[in-house]
Length: 216
Image (cartoon, rainbow, N blue to C red; front, side, top):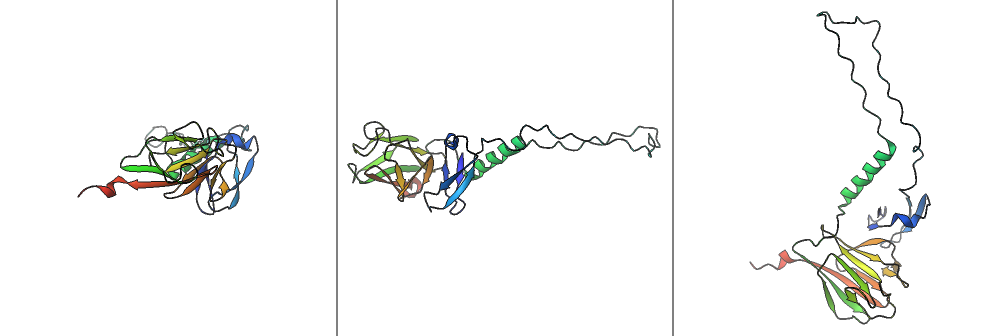
């Protein structure tokens, strides 16, 4: 599910299984530290389990003649529109929210280049170009091997979406993944030139448009 901070409108993805059956959970925004509550979409609505409301069909008015002056019977009155199911409405609203948020699946957008610059740790002063939509960071495994003893073997992943957004997710690492000093949960969107840390290794995301460097 996509969680949107009501204070700064930052978006990040959160695994619904982390609710562990709770009806709601309190979150701290990794960007602005605002604390807010998010309802668990998997918990049944109070309306679930109740039968659908009956549709009332209008009965013919006995005070009216059964036929028109031409001798033709009147067409029956149209039925009222069906009452929407609460669960269907909730899913439609959730899909609309995802569409409005512009979240798409992984895929390298054309004419854009993404890279990670190492700021501290064993990879300081290096630049790694991200050439595929899903990149794993780890101490010994992955596309970016940090060789940092404070980084887990499989520490975090970077996901690039077709709309040009970039997301970082901690892979249940021992020491966590941090943005602005806050340990993240689930997927959190990264902005251009934003920093994040895995153990003692700090990286900066760099995004540039190749159209800005075309020859004229």
